[in-house]
Image 1 (tube, helix red, strand yellow):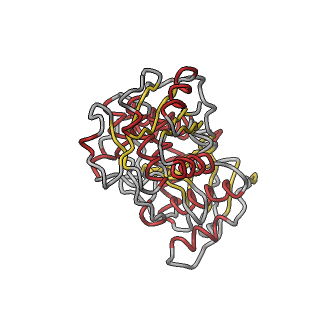
Image 2 (cartoon, helix red, strand yellow):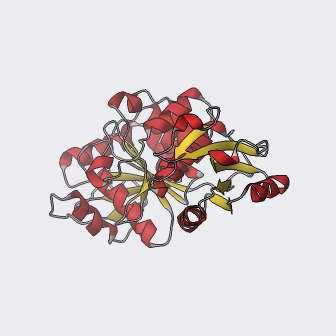
Image 3 (tube, one colour):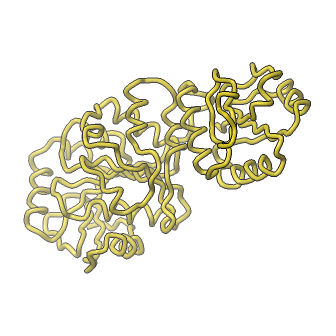
Length: 340
């Protein structure tokens, strides 16, 4: 369901430019209306309701804003913000439009109630996991995400490792996933709207992602219930959700396995990785629950003797210390599942 946004500014050129850019790049999120006069805004508000509005202060004084769920005041740096109506939140006028969009959605997410409108179609979820570290789990997750984007899918990469790999592969500097954790903890607002507002998109691959947490503890204290709510919210944002997981097999991991439509089990040529995966399959009842949706990914040219599952993907060894180069090469590989 789109956010109905009103832009009201006496600067016709600015209002038109802002509207055009939002409509061009964020048409999946916003339905935009523009006005530049008090007469026009009164006309619009007499016939329509808006979820949010960006209004110059001059439009606020004599306008009934009862049809706007969240009025926001547009103010320029050369203006005194104290002149604006202080009961309404403010957004700086002349800044990057992507920053304005993120700010609007973050504020709207806190003001909106969850469950507005029809239930969105949920994404296909792929969980990427291994009981051993260093097997290339993140490289596989990102390569698969990039592959799906190249096939026309909208993909969100969600990193839930104890220590995030996001800064290694992406250079986004936006608001991090900690903002989502805070909303989950406070149990107020719309997490899905917030995710739409703060997600970044990788310029090279087109993969959407959330920036790393503000600190280690933010990820560490995420509860099992929080994980379920986070996955549910992310799955309503894009067509595909790829979850990069910690190597632990704790309650949070079990929760992710439960929600996943498919689980990539990653291993490499080392005896350590293959032994740990075999132990997980042989000794852990969790494996029996996910076996039907598990796909064994033999990474780095691994030759597998005990295949464990009826489906396998084989990926080559990429001789490079550059994480981006590895990701680029693997994303060109086939992720078609073959039978053993």
